[in-house]
Length: 42
Image 1 (tube, rainbow, N blue to C red):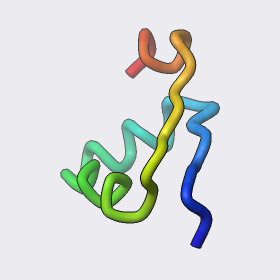
Image 2 (cartoon, rainbow, N blue to C red):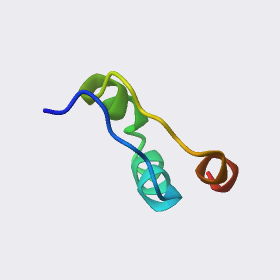
Image 3 (cartoon, one colour):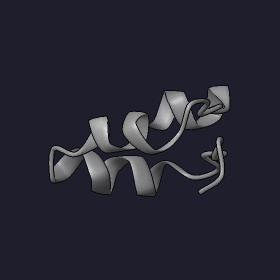
Image 4 (cartoon, rainbow, N blue to C red):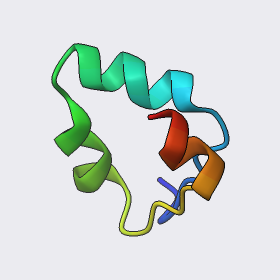
C-alpha cells in the first residue's frame, strides 16, 4: 500500500464523508496532501 495519496478532486472526499469513513484515509495513508482548491470545495 502506498504511504501517500494525493486528493485531486473533492468528490472522493465528499463521498467518503457521506458514509462517515474519513478516518479510513488516516488509517491507510500517512500523508494526504490536498490542494487549496479541493479544500475550498470540500
